[in-house]
Length: 322
Image 1 (tube, rainbow, N blue to C red):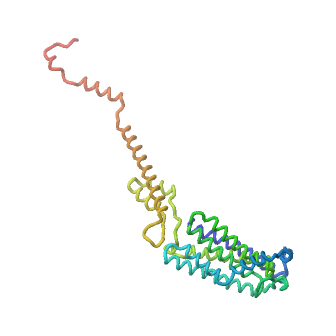
Image 2 (cartoon, rainbow, N blue to C red; image 1 turned 180 degrees about the vertical axis):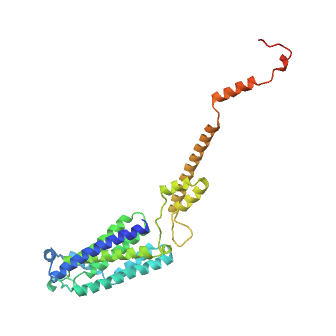
Image 3 (cartoon, one colour; image 1 turned 30 degrees about the vertical axis):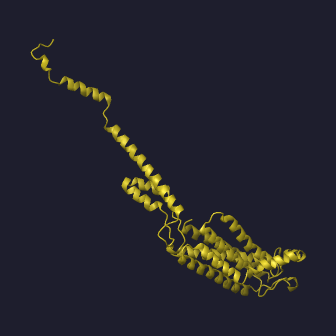
């Protein structure tokens, strides 16, 4: 995916998430923080289904959504995304800045909305501050988003299971806040929307303004229109044009590109060279057909030469028949 496409996609997702978050925030403020939609029903169900094993699992899982764990995972995301030491250092700094700034902005929104939490009698874990949006949910969702982006940028084989596990972790941390009775369900939804909006804004800004030499890769690829243009400009100039347009720009900080991309470039160059050879052969055949005389013209020229040829010396002195 090209950088421009990344900017457009991330910006669109972020704008949609911010719009939904703004609408939900206005609804919460308009109802003075009282439960909305299915908040009370989900809390009642959670209170009535709390076996000891489920409570222990929920407490352990919800603990990973705060403290050192999210920042350690964000740093890991930066290490996975980068390919050189310089790129990894910059990626780690950007991931930590995204997570830290997101938490600060979320805290400011939480203080402005000032929504009360569910009744303290339903709590089964420690909690502090206002309810909307959920802090654990926002932090876990941001961290999961950073990890998913890093896995997709690095592009290892079999990355789908990793993405599913990371996404499930980010979602379950938010659901444990409802199960443990410290948040309404709309607080969790607000945390998810806030995280998606902030992540989209950060990704769009990085893709737009971060220099290409600091990004793990670019996605400019060879196209058929470039091939046609190169062949139309001539055989010799065409090969140079193909080399410039077919090779993807890889800014990994090293002098060599990944082996897979180099193989793709060489394969494309061989295909273009084969097409040029076929075109040259066709031009040669056409030129040969144009220069070769027709059989009728050849016979006529032969007869003309015979008519204008000098008499045979052996016939000198002989009389020709009338």
